[in-house]
Length: 96
Image 1 (cartoon, rainbow, N blue to C red):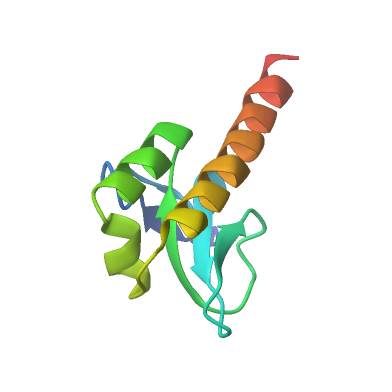
Image 2 (image 1 turned 135 degrees about the vertical axis):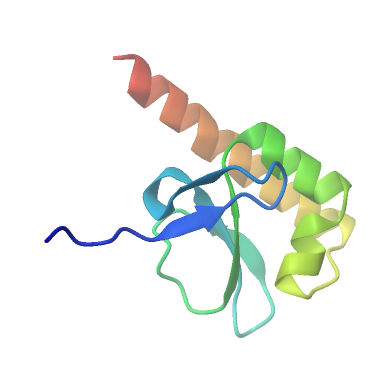
């Protein structure tokens, strides 16, 4: 019997995938919103599959709705920067 792997859905495009293939964005118990590449931080989470989807989720308010929090310009800027670093690292790592 094989172990069932957790499936998550991207809040921007609706793509379903294994938990490991998507990146979690978390609202911590302190109210801070940040990327959670490990998927293990405490708090309410939402998932995105790519930088483009992160951008879409920020523009359309889907992260705010999923995380039940209002994001200011500073929060969005911080998430964009973290997303650029994270997703560019994935691309660089997958090419070699």
